[in-house]
Amino acid sequence: MKWLVAALFAALLLLQYRLWLSNDGVAEVLRLRAAVVARQTDNARVTERNRQLAAEVRDLKQGYSALEERARSDLGMIAGNESFYQVVPPRALAPAAAPMAPAPALPNTERTAAAR
Image (cartoon, rainbow, N blue to C red):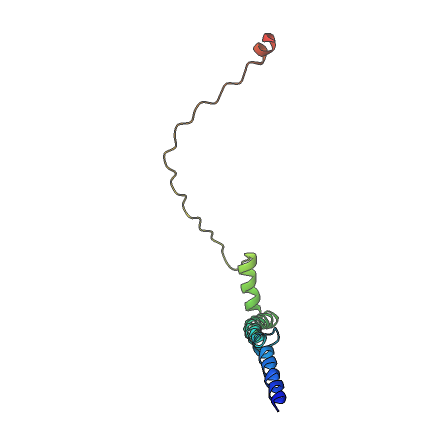
């Protein structure tokens, strides 16, 4: 009877070791749960992006307002009955520049040729 109890106790210890300390035990389950949560978050983000892109495609196929908006923002186009005004911001005044040094004189080619 002592051997049976000892064998059962050894089996219990072996199973506890596999459960808590081995690579395919509780630690692996926790890691997989965290990975599932991360994938669900990514899937939700991508699903929302796909929904927005599908709505944009539907708008582009159905009406001209989305197409006009896209042409204006991406291509800079204007309609035939509109006027285009470009507002240019004023340049900032540059600080007083130091006076420029005179340009160096070019060497006299005749003198340099004669000096050789």
